[in-house]
Image 1 (cartoon, rainbow, N blue to C red):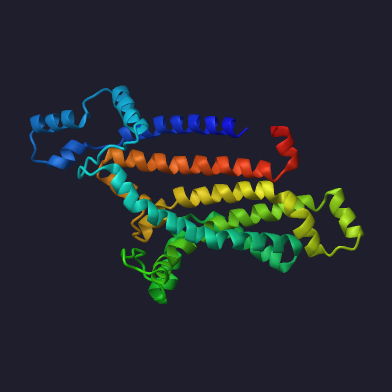
Image 2 (cartoon, helix red, strand yellow):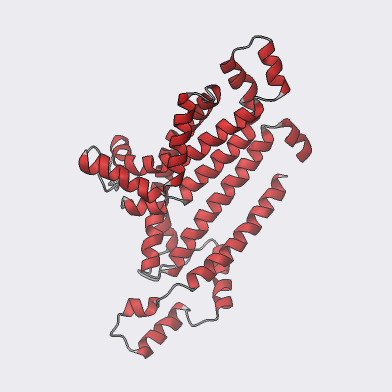
Length: 313
């Protein structure tokens, strides 16, 4: 089962690599012209394009790119000549830190609100949380980011508007400077996870074994935590994994808003500079993380459900 999921994930990643290459190739502008400036002669631009391999047919360029990738080499940046792997390594840690920071807040909060909403189904608390989460889902993350910045950085200067921190910053300073971008991500993903947790538990509350547990005199909260929640883990794990994957791959807009030097900011800057190898590498990493976490979610969902485990065997 795991091998089959892995093969499917690799096939998906290959198809995504084709789409990434085609999409990046359609970007307007010429990197050779941008490097040399507007005063460069056509002959000089043509020579630089030959040197960079941009005069090759599209298929040949794709095969060359895939060959370097399979050899473990992302190539060199067209803007500054540095290895793409070095640029990625300098930014990957910060993106993972921001995603982990947001996940550490969002996952427990979503599970708590989802369980409590299912326990208090139909109450004022349930309606308020449901309405708030629907509101958060409706707003794009950049809007939430700017609202947080307006109230918590401009009107009430509790946090900085720029989330960058130096290499010598301590953990407290890092958490403080990245609080606003982390909260922007938390408000978006918590809504999805909370609603799935609530729906999964409420769906199980109509099962006969839950009715039997109630007839035995077991309290409602214990019925949810002991009898319903373990059987609701499969869909909850799936939605948690998907949202964590989104935290890693969906930070692009939030990083740009708060000028946070992660992979998302690097990708946007590289698009502006027409730095094709860097853009392709960033997109491929985001896709690989998303596919890997979805694979992990499938495995964990089956492992927590004996019926699915038996079927997989």
